[in-house]
Image 1 (cartoon, rainbow, N blue to C red):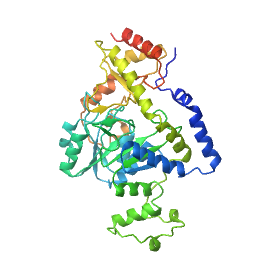
Image 2 (image 1 turned 180 degrees about the vertical axis):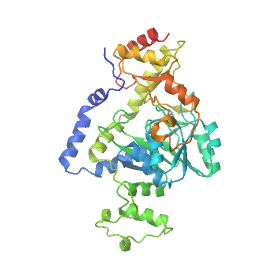
Image 3 (image 1 turned 90 degrees about the horizontal axis):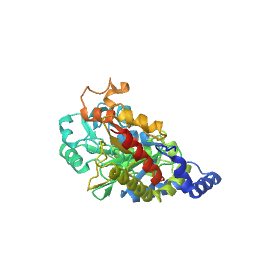
Image 4 (image 1 turned 180 degrees about the horizontal axis):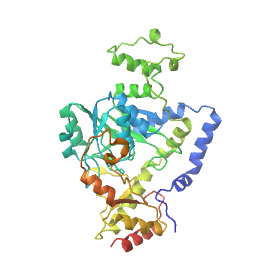
Length: 391
């Protein structure tokens, strides 16, 4: 039996007719960039997330970079985040010239520990960047309370948490802005790369729209005037409405979600709640089966809905167990084996620090298959191997 950790083929096959027809319609349309599917998906994702604005872009990393710029994070600013996450989180901070400042994670949620945030705040701190990790929402009430007290912005990294819920609200609607990745393996994944920024701020949304297309167009003009304190716009004077993309008001970048990916994502969004339901059922089945064993299973919180992008176990003998899983044809992996404070790319940027929980998690955690199309027979086999090897 061969069981992949993530199985994109199976996800496609389940609704293949829908996805392929959507793709074919785009290919035949001749409209491939920033078309009607992109506009419709932005509207539908905003409604799903419960926010006013959703701005699509090329990928989740670009979403973080663009959002930080749109929120006014500048060179020399500090952004507080976690060292136990994918590299892109800190990379985006560094790419705008700001400095990532790390705070250790909670051993229960693997998300940033709010009790340690205030001690990391300095006069240079501009924002807090919590990560909803593995699909588990961070403790946003406490984070927002700290941010409000110190006049800081909050940017959610929701790359792994499309559809996750915190106290009745979807991730993406819990801070000043949020960023999503639609990488194919994600809970909501496209057939290539894609990203999204969500916000309830018109100013952030307009800036993000401008930055993703070279700082041009009406969004660029609106943002330029906003930054200059000129709230009253004179579009006829300042821009030729027939050729808005050739009027550049900010130095931006090129990061657009293409029409093909948007069309597929629109179809997948209609199935997202079902995907999440099945992921949660698989997670509950694992957790029940592993009760009383030497494994530490993910914690369920009454006020949160974990979408289980990854189902991650903790064990002191993680390396040996991963080896046994692989020998039995079961996909597994560590997310992530190197805390960001130890990544060589960041050693000249971030301050030295000790993050014992993140270090322990990197050494002792590993993921097992939890994708929606997983069968009970496959789960039972995974559990059997786990119980044999986890002594």
